[in-house]
Image (tube, rainbow, N blue to C red; front, top):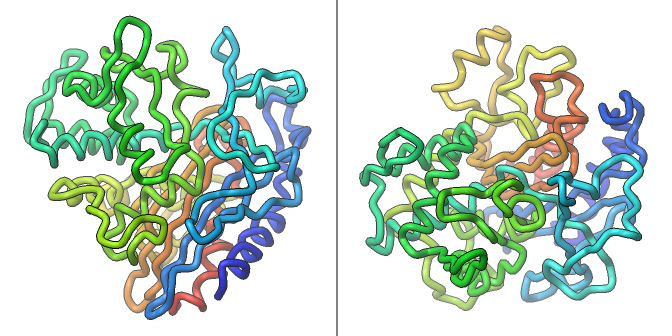
Length: 394
């Protein structure tokens, strides 16, 4: 398989879902008026072969899909990404029905290519950046997983805050850890201005220029009301995938970094991977935690961690056989859905790949209030996994 082959596989998988027909609750269940924005990246690691990777993007401006030109440096050269927007009321105005993009005050995010792409807010996928930032503090001796952190009336070990932020996507835990990043000096503000951000310095060093955790507050504030949120917290699919590449101990060396580049994490890596592997929210590219909902659609065939299986079993007695482990982080709001992680086959399956998706297909497109998004996204996950199965050794 070549990079071009993988790109065509991804384009075909997205087109087959007919996202343009997705019902939109904001329009009374009628199909959305514009093709949704979908940023999708995959890197496949076949035994004994060079890594194969691709990034494809769809939007109202690119409804047939666009292949990112990643080039020898594995950085996007044909696209200029612009940041998402919120208005004075904190609304995600780019995704409201009838939104006219020609009149919106876009600001650059990264890239200078001829094709524009509005990078959707990553929702709780942003917590992957927070997790890495806290883990780096632990590795540097500036914090400790066992250290007790007090926040909002609770005192818990740092490791527990990190687990809940990742595995159950707890917003309160996220605030506690962002407060900790400020308290340890990793992020610093002078008045209303952020003057120091070690995560941004790290991401620039790693070539991950779209990863932004900007304008958070020392009290742990990170949402729209805190002056951060949409437009300040950003992640493209390709940079999210490359961050995961640096967390994947079984992945080949990152081709965009110099040979012998220092690992992203040290001893803290074990807890980071534990948090990702114990994800409870299999509801976007994988769907095991939604089993039993009306119209359930199987997604990427991931194993639901044992600690969460009793809840799923109460919904249905027929959990499909899992084929892979999916160490991942999801994100979901009314207007946004994201999912990114590391996929490894369960024996005898051997496949190993990374996948990342950001989109504006939030909960307003879900067919059931208990679902996170349209069933078309788990169907997309299943289609991609099926397409990679033969190439990656079942």
